Image 1 (tube, protein in one colour):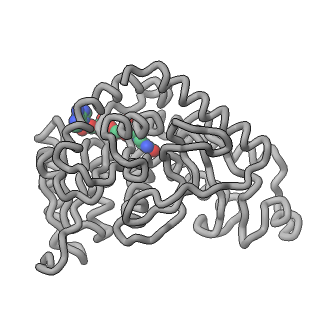
Image 2 (cartoon, rainbow, N blue to C red):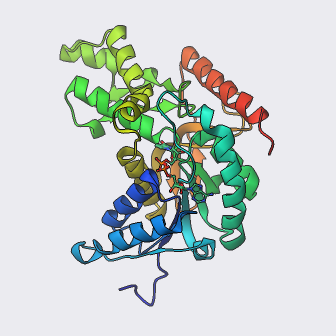
Image 3 (cartoon, rainbow, N blue to C red):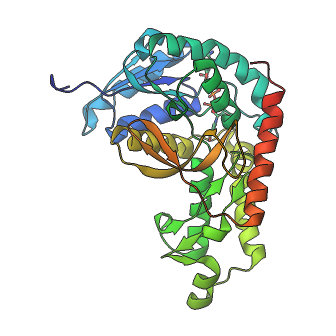
Amino acid sequence: MVSHFKRPTRIAVVGTGNVGATFAYALLLSGLASEIVLIDTNHAKAEGEAMDLNHAVPLLPQPARVWAGTYEDCATALITVVTAGAAQRPGETRLDLVNRNVAIFKQIIPEIVRHSPNTILLIATNPVDILTYVALKLSGFRTNHVIGSGTILDTARFRYLLSQHFDVDPRSVHAYIIGEHGDSEVPVWSLANIAGMRLPQYCAINHMECQPSILEDIFQQTRDAAYHIIERKGATYYAIASGLVRICESIIRDQGSVLSVSSYLEDYYGISDVCLSLPSVIDLDGIERVIRLDLSPAEIEGLRKSASVLKEVLNSLDL
Ligand code: 6V0
């Protein structure tokens, strides 16, 4: 039962398709939220998901109230997670989705702002960097209150694949993917490490293989993972749902965790007025700061290229 002395932790989820419903389930299991409201133009779908999720509650360690609602229910939501929109079809890039999903955001974002001006917007809809920027402009929110899931997913995929190669727990691999959540993303090899040792040194001392072709293959598998999954099962949702829960956890518990998420940049290696991912400190107020990285010249060039790919798309939009 919710304590009378504590405000409920309400999380709103807009879009209850594969990603939204899976996120709601993962959030319910996490025990982080006491109220989860589901909003979808297909209200019956949101209702069905709420019913199914509520039936899990008696079996869970931490209760929560789940319901299918309207934008009025976003009021008092600490975080509003937006997963609404069209998804990639086989062979389609994330950037191909842009016009369809910008039109959807023009309906959704003003409704959220009207009812919940202090919420933190957490965007997952693709192309996520573009839609994070669009959400920022349409909402007029402070930049720290608009977060895109960005490369939290790519970083997780990268760490998983590296952990398979190096035969360690993925949580013991420290490596980031930055830039666009998409084809121009950049692996930060120069800072990747295990037990504080950069990979070339780690490999030399521990007699492991890490020649460039192996590392390049790991990066390609990371970058192209969504295409391979979509070819096989039509959509991706478990890992992104876990990434969204991890971001919510850092906000709700004011953890200050460093996560690679998308946010608005101002003069980052000369990059401004675009949203893309960099390791950022996340606390109760959203993006506390974007960490300045000591990147190699090739990584800086890759990041600038990624920013210019995104800017080209932003310049074609009618906002
Ligand atoms: P889905 O299963 O088609 O669900 C989309 C949901 O959005 C449906 O239930 C729709 O009814 C709903 N919807 C559409 N328009 C509106 C609207 N105006 N208001 C409210 N609800 C609406 O798609 P899925 O869940 O698979 O993907 C959702 C989005 O997440 C897509 O853009 C994906 O590309 C994106 N993903 C983002 C990832 C990331 O890493 N950021 C990862 C995977 C998918």
